[in-house]
Image: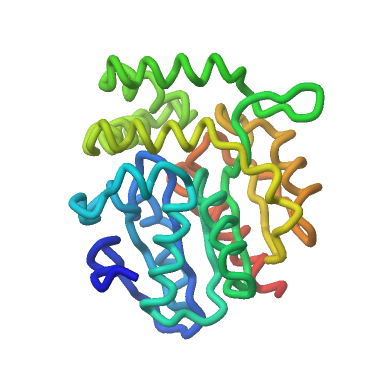
Length: 268
């Protein structure tokens, strides 16, 4: 384990409770994207925010193109944070690709997490018809990655409003675009590649940690059937379909996001 794990991942801890809640951000983002949701849990939980290596204010010098060539490298980040902080029964809240990172971490450390809360989660973004409708043809995703590689700023300008899906609030898409542009382009390309081309479906039946699946409406990256697929393949899971639109409900609809998480935790 790296001795500087907390500095490496820019870990911040707050809250007055004892049970840990660990919030994992999505691709192209950082812990600031939880700022409208995480504080709501500080009265009763130990809230832990962090940046994956290569994102936010993490230690960019710690980035390894080998370690982070798969989602397992990011899952190892999560487990090292848990070990460093000696976390007991943490609740892992993951947005987008962090949901799959949390699932992989739960398999590497069985029994560690009490709950997985998966927001806008997809185990595979491309179609495998007739068995699975991920939303995209693999060639479409490869084309999107090609655009990212050759015209990163144009890619960010195109993807941000599509992902945010709240055109009446353009400031949200601008924030996402700025986050994309603030990161190292080579690192983000590799993160995008493993995010959109990974296929985690085969491990889902092995997951033993209870999960809440939170599916936003009109999510350009995660169609509704994906949530049902996750529900069917994650034993003991629950699914909640949100009124929130877009892939970033914790920014665009924080009140609903908080309410659903809180109601779920209150029912445990």
